[in-house]
Image (cartoon, rainbow, N blue to C red; front, side, top):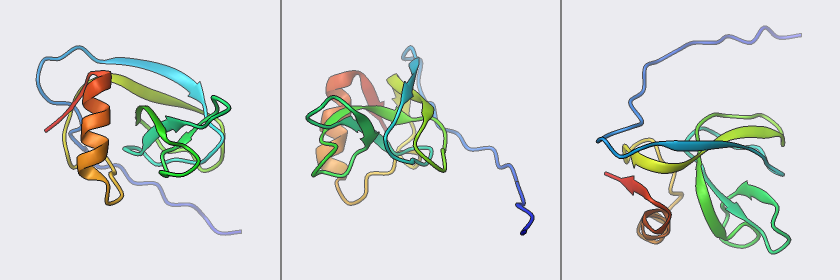
Amino acid sequence: MKNKIYSTTDVRIFQGSFPVETINQTLKTKVEAGDVIALDNSKNFGKYDGTTYTNVYGVSYETIEQPGEVTVILTGGLVKDFVKFNNKEKELTIELRKLGIFVK
């Protein structure tokens, strides 16, 4: 069995004075901190992929290695480098803005 090494790095993710709201949500996919969370047609939550999970809901605050519960940021000002756009920055920035998530 391999030992897992943990390290911590301070990462600034919030900016501005816009109120931050979060919720714990059960996801059907694994995610990393900064991944955009979306719903599928059956109202299941998972990592935005543009095909199955398409209705943008928020941004993951943490990483989970397998499907399960995660804290999702619903509103607030986020630092651009924190959000993982996966080559859809313009589209996702607009969708997040509609939810009250400001990316700068």
